[in-house]
Length: 60
Image (cartoon, rainbow, N blue to C red; front, top):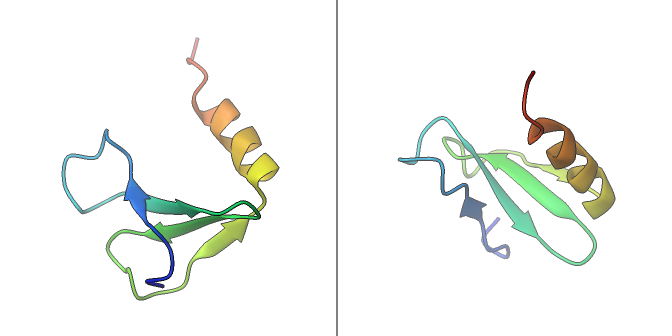
């Protein structure tokens, strides 16, 4: 999937146990950093934003 510019979270200290994302205007692509040649998940930008908004909220 080299046509995308894959990025890891800055919270990930090394290349393992994380996800990488690549974004275009039409989609967000998500893959496992340990399997860069494997399949990846594609979602619409609004779906990704919704997911991130729920995972980033502090736990009470």
